Image 1 (tube, rainbow, N blue to C red):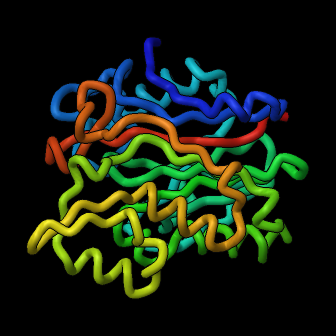
Image 2 (image 1 turned 90 degrees about the vertical axis):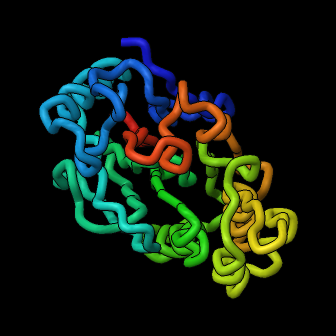
Length: 255
């Protein structure tokens, strides 16, 4: 199966870790979902999506393990996943777990996918951050939940952000900047370029700044991949295509 899977090279040293930011190629879905659409919620044929999942898990060596996702609603809810959780865990835009054999994942088609890990205790999380989630501070909320539930110091975390729409293609109204800036004024510096009644927004830059603000060392934050809207041959992009599929970003530990 010929799929595009981006990985953090610096994470190669973490034995047993399996993760990836996937592209759209290598699946069975037909246009406008072509081809590795992994979402059941955008109108694609459910049997085809199920086959895409089977093919993907076989290709990355996870055929015998659960990849747990949630119903994403552009909020800031982080769900805790256990070893007994099924393939869907509920409604939320972030998932975290300390269970081995369980992988957590989020869908995106322009929004920012974030993967978190703490290597000593093998704890991971996956987060979906669109502009609404970014305004709500979902990256910071994930850090707070990891600290509360697992007593993890933010300085011990490694975070990676995958392919998402870039400021080159993400023009939004001033109301979006105002909502984000209401809570993250300093973090908006350098991530917002006004252009009259609209402006260009760098979602990854804001999330990076939010992570640093709550204690994640910048040297432990990575950004991978191209602008999704500029590269629709490789990635799904809702802004560029309208009706389209969703790509998966996932992370977890093998036994």
